[in-house]
Amino acid sequence: MALQESQHEGNTPPPEPVIQIQDAIAAGDDDDADSSIGEEENERLDLQHELYVRTLDGGLALCPKAKGANRVLDMGTGTGSWAIDYADANPQAEVIGVDLSPIQPALVPPNVSFEIDDLEKEWTWTQKFDFIFARMMLGCFTDFPQIIKVAFDNLEPGGYLELQDMSLPARSDDGTLHSESYLSKWCRSCFEAGQNLGRPVFPTTEYKNYLAAAGFVDIVEVQQKWPTNPWPRERKFKELGAWACANIAGGLDGLSLAYFTRGLGWSTEETRVFCAHVRKDLQNPRIHAYWPM
Image 1 (spheres, one colour):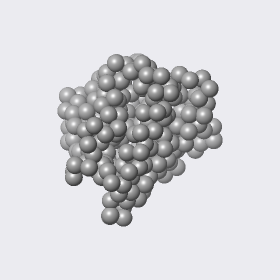
Image 2 (spheres, one colour):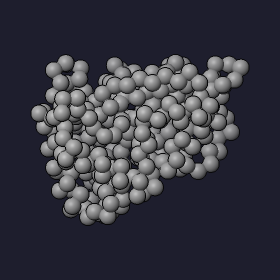
Image 3 (cartoon, rainbow, N blue to C red):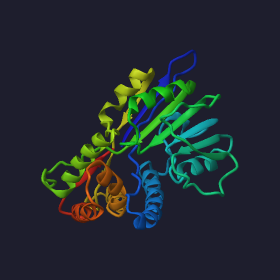
Image 4 (cartoon, rainbow, N blue to C red):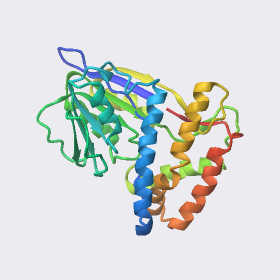
């Protein structure tokens, strides 16, 4: 997982950003499927949150504001799992989760609130944050470097931005993931669809440069791996592989339908058939692939 931290310049210590792993794409255009896929996708987002927590050995973040922040923004909050957990663990904090979709629960801790808004439009908060968090934002913005600059401008001196994202394409170190495999083709299709939709998959390897250009300092990058299934021998990575497989292989249709039907012009049936082949690769223990984080 590429986790980057950087600080805001000023008289007090600057804010730190951390890089996040990628989130889900909305369901496709098939009206009959929208409801069921929406429910499945919400469950996948909650599962993905648990996968991140396990990746961080029970933590919610890595930067110094992982505990003790006072005013927190969760960008692209999804089902709100991270915001709720952070609010529970930090009762002194005011936590605001923002997303385009109203899929957050009604019963939440008193110090967390959710707003339905487009983060690519003007940010209208009058009070700055000391911690901004974003996870799985690959392909979600037309201009991710600009979003990072806006986040910088909305952090108080000494605040932190933490970004956690999964990198594409999937890789293997032993040659078991072939370039013409369905999994490799899926990764290339994601890049093509994102470009066509005007929401490119910005490379996580460039995040540290985006952060520096925005004005952040003391940038820290942490890299990890999510195995595509439980193929590793080491216990922790075997467990992470099982969770990652459930998250991505289990939710592959929900992740792909909107992207491929809208970005590539594929039919719903064509996308589902393709996903079935990709899923077999994701579940194949002979393919020693992983997602760079």
